Length: 580
Image (cartoon, rainbow, N blue to C red; front, side):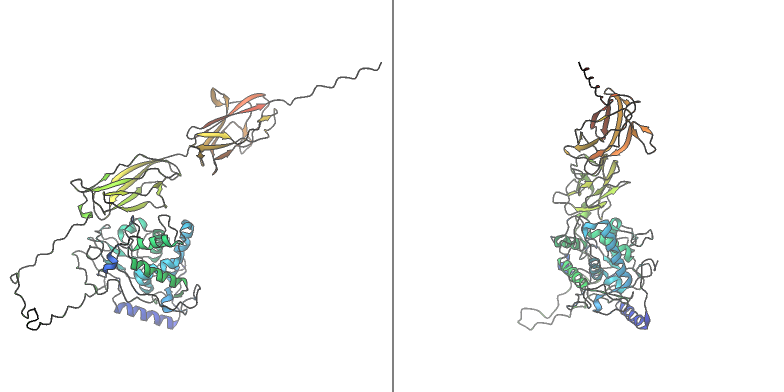
C-alpha cells in the first residue's frame, strides 16, 4: 500500500530528529484538535450571507486553527518543491503522505469534474486550518491518522447543535456529532460526501486519501467553478460558514500557490492558535467517549475577586448574603428548544408530478415543509434529500444528496433533478437533519428518450436497378417539440404495404455483418445532432415500388418510397432509306 501511494519514508538521522521533535511537541500540547472541547468566537458563530444556504457546513462550523502564514513567500517560488528534507519556509513544508493525498484528489477531480478546476493547494489550505495537516502528518503507511482527530461535540453550546447521526460510529459520541478526521467532516455530511480515495473498499474520514477526495467532491458540488472567485468563496464558506475562516483559507491558499516542499510524515509544523482559545470547556456528556491520551482544553483562569470600593464610592465592601440556603442544589437554566427540536413531521408542499426523459432536467422540483405536531411551519431546519435505489439520476451538479434549509414558510425546495439513462421509477427521500422523524418519499419517473417528428435530410429520389445497390443512403433527423432529439431508439423496416407493417419478403434489403439479407434493423439510435443514417440498401430482382418505415420511441414515424426498375433502353435508330 505504501508503494501504491508513493509515500516517501523518513531519511537520515537529522530528518528523524526533526520528526521526534515534532512528535514531542505534539504530546506536550496534547494535540489540539483531539477531542478539543471549546467554543467558537462570536464572529465565527455568526452565519455569513455568502455561504451556501443549502448545505449548512461540512464541519458543523467547528473551531479551527487560526495561525497565519508567514509574510515572506516560500522559497523556491513557485515549484513543486524538493523532496524530503527540502528547504524553504517551515510553514511551506507539507508531510509526504498528506501532500500525495491532496495531489491525487486533484487528479481524480480533474477527470470526474473538469469544470470545477480544483487546485490541490486549496485542499492543503483547508487541511492546514482544520487539522494542521493531520497534526503534522501523523499518519500510517495507508494514510490513516495515528490517533483520531475529533472536534468538540456539537451540542449547541457556542456553535451548532447537531444531535448524534451515526450512533457514535465515527466520533465515539452517541449524544452529539463531532467533526472527524484530518479534513474535519461531521458524520452526517460524511454519510453522503465520503469517498474511497485509497482503493481499500472503505470510506474512512480518518484516512487522508479518503478525506481529501471527499473534500474535493464537496467543494466541487453545485457545479461550482473554483477558478471563479465567487464560486471559490461559496465553496469555502460552505465548509465553515465564517468570513474569518474564508479569509484565513484564502491566505493559506495563496501562500501554498507560491511554493511548497515535502517533509517526512510526522515532521510537519503544528499550529499554536485556535478559534476557540480561551473559551471554557464543554461539559462532558455521560456515555460520550474520549480517545485515549487526549485531554480537554483548559478553561480560562478564574477572575480575581473585585477590589472593595472606598466609602462614598457608591459601592459596598460587604458581600450580599446568599438568597438560597447553603446546600440547596441550583436549578439548571432552562434550555430553549431549537427549531429542529420542534419538528414533528414532514409534509409535501405541493410537489407536482415528476417526470422527465432520460438525459433531461426535471421541469418540477421537490418541495417539503417541516411542521410541528400542531401543523405549524418550522423555519431554519435542515432537510436532507437523498436519491435512493439503483439509478443514475442525480441532482444537478452530479450529487445524490442535497441539504436545504427551510425558509420562513417552513419549506425546503430540493435542487432540480437530472434524469440519468436508466429508465423507470426513482425515489427521493426527505429527512430532517439532527432529528429522528419519519422520512418522506417522493416518486419520480424517467422515461426513455423520444422523438415526435422524423424528416429526411435530403430529397433525392431513391432508385435502383434490379440486383444493384441504391446510390443514396437514407438519412433522417429526429426532433422533439422542435428541439434536437438525440440518443433516441429507432427501428427501420422494409414493410409489405402501407397497411401491413410486417417485413417484406422481397424487394430492397439491408445486409448484416455477415452479408446476409435483413429487412428489419433494430437497436438504432440518433446521434448528438438527432441524425440517423441507415446502412446501404440493395435490391433483388423484383421490380416495383417499395416502402421503408422508420419509427422511434415516442411515436415518430416516417415512410420512405424506394423504386426498383430496369434501366431504360433507347430504341434502335431507324435504318436509312436505300438510295434511289
